[in-house]
Image (cartoon, rainbow, N blue to C red; front, top):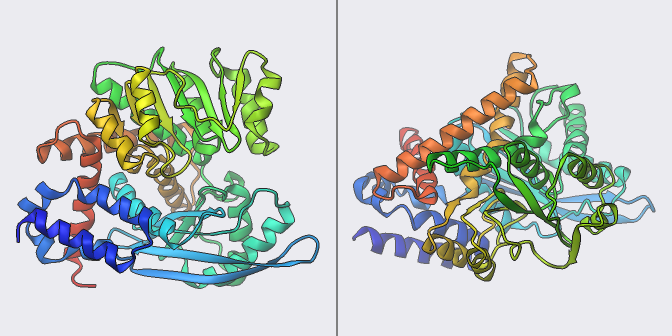
Length: 449
């Protein structure tokens, strides 16, 4: 059987096995579409059935999470942990708390995490978890009761040498604190079993900023490779959480001008650009008051809030989707192209639909997949684990130096892997190939397990 026939048959069987898991299938198809030359030159991967094995989680844990709200009413949510692949190290990946969480979403996120962690070259496997619990609109005490109940079951399955969760959408330092506190009480063990902790009790400086800063550093390397820089470039961003805010902060520090930002309620267009004063306001609005961007133009009258609208119609040089999967579709991509956009750098996991990627690449825009450009978060999580193990505490400058070095290394690894297999300059292919080969070789070394 030739390689194309093999991959087509593999994808057909994958879809037949779980026909409703469309987001997961999309993630697998995106990776497999770039692996043909790798499989042709390395038939051992077909013989060892690596695709079949790497797309099946090693373990999926599903459990109920009962909790009580402030009025005494009882609620039941569903909890998950997908322990995807441990060939390179203990499972590592975030916890997502959002109403959209289900097994399909977490399989896709866990699959992406395997490749992302591989790209960092840190000794980390891949996993993902979470719940269909939505933290929005909940009080601190309600979030605490939910997190404690969640860990009452999950603590059986995680640990410093087994599976180390972190934060993700809807799960920040507050939620990590509540989960770690209950984990510590149940296990009587103060270890680095979670990352994303606050720095005053074992967390790493720069962890909240890490994913966003890493996105900006990756974009900087992409432009530097082309003999250009971010200086003076107009940028737009989606998402107004940690990733979006800190991508914006680092882009601004690197000389770019961010004029657009988006959240659940709509987008803002600020022709002035997000300066230090505006950034401080956004941090307070989002992180402290947990407010909406619809308040922004009341503070800065020159800006425009656009209810229900995305940012992608705002003219820009570079676009940074940092919110969630499939947020940028083919029509959005065409708007960017028509407005003269030169590149798209993903800050979230699979934010571009297949049609969007096809149009972006056909128009020869620079494009980086999230598994490469948003790996800064897990990179600093790995650094947090190192600091916990060594009982040391690195300065902000030391952590940022390591982060920048890791992002530069990922960029170089992507370019080299793509060039090696006849696809020079293709960051998507390079990320997939480098991530896949490292994990696949480790799986073969460890035997049929």
